[in-house]
Amino acid sequence: MVDATISLVDRGSIRTDRNFLIENETMGSAADPNPDVEMIEGPVYNLVIDHPEATILWDTGSHPECGDGYWPAELYAAFEHHDADEHPLPDALEDVGYSVDDIDAVVQTHLHLDHAGSLHRFAGTDVPVFVHEQEIKYAYYSAKTEQGSSAYVPSDFDHDLNWRIVHGDTETHFEDVEFLHLPGHTPGVMGTRIDIDGYGTVVFTGDQAYTRANYDEEHPMGGELLWSKRHWEESLQRVQELERRTDADVYCGHDPDDVEELRDGLP
Image (cartoon, rainbow, N blue to C red; front, side, top):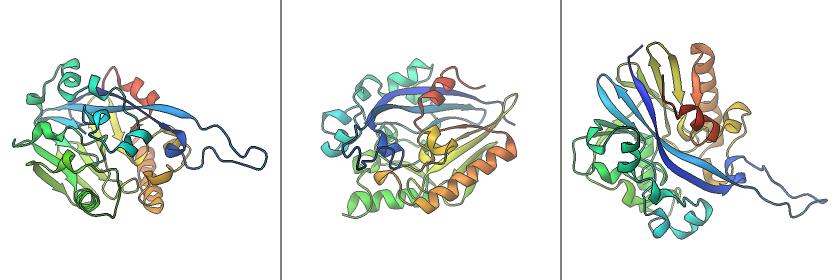
């Protein structure tokens, strides 16, 4: 167990069709061929892990100009981040008592546009940026070819960054902070397990589980939010087994209730 604290960094919210988050949530039928869809808001957040070995930023969030043409128009229409400009990373960090200069290391759960859009803040620095090997390969493949996923914006991550590549299913680079490879949403999603002195084990799934429904009720995400359903199911089972074995508190990637629990920080 390590004497660490965790602070929530509020980066606003994304508005999208619930069918993206829960596969086939709203479907037509003979009796109701044109059902109303539900548009919902999900929070975007980062974390500051104040660890004896480093002040670690977990994800960097959306680019503040995502609604001003920085994101492709069709993606912004589907995932509207209307308040990103109100929560730029420097201001959001200042709200919880930190600055960009305080950050000693960055952990990128993956490189989608709502998670990697502020990596430019660390361009040209020696701050290590941890990312999984499978993620950085798929991000560049997607961004530089017509294949892969459209959810990667090359200008988010194509910078002079001090990349530290995570290769395994599990790696530890800071005491009692474990990076977990949880493919499914993308090939290289990384969750994080932290064993906190006086509190216990906490697991942040990242977008392996977007909401509690994905995790608790095992409903997969819909549309293009799953790179591989089979990998997603295997990763879900892995986190659930970890929760059973360690009695961990598990927090999902964009769940409003989870964010409210985290607002006061841990422990």
